[in-house]
Length: 241
Image 1 (cartoon, rainbow, N blue to C red):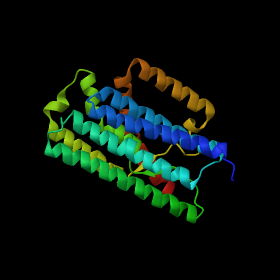
Image 2: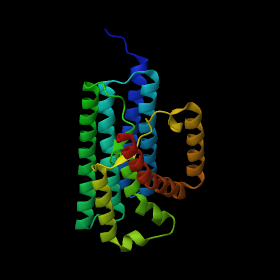
Image 3: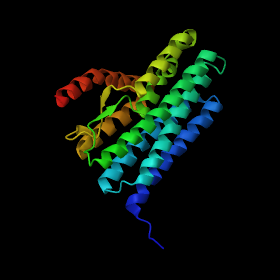
Image 4: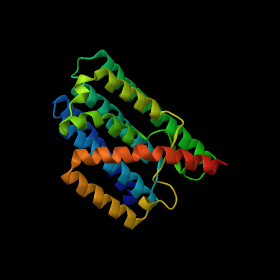
């Protein structure tokens, strides 16, 4: 009997933990406990960042881990946030809301499938890890579509009075998931996040900010991410010349 390799097992356990948070988010959304549903999605995001980083550090990346990661991402950052936004903002009674949520879930699935295809093509050609993602990653897409809901916890209920605008916003984010726009990847060489000190500093700052100012921190991080997109396009164009 083949002995279990702890180096391979640990990242997959973290992936499955993230999947559990995604399932818990769906449960809380169905019970109308929307703030806890958001928190579960955030914890799933932490697991998603840690499993890949740990697998690369331990040199234990595997096909099983890659498939588990994609399935976990689809549930945690596709189905869970789509259902959450439909159950909360649209209050389960809006055709345009149902269409927008469905579009986000479908495009999340499509994005992950495209990512897996590109990953296999990269392996076949012995290509180096990409410094850029193509389109917005599903975890960031999940954060972006729940922003209108976080505003309500900050005292701004504009989303409930502008359902068509929110639906259009969600459809726009859905399109960005499968767009050809290059966005920065934390796998980039010489990335500050990739260094141990950089990761610890960034993780500590974000963790403390979220503990004390959760909704504000989510919105600030989302804004910072959106502001990096023009720079990622410029960097990609410069590197392709």
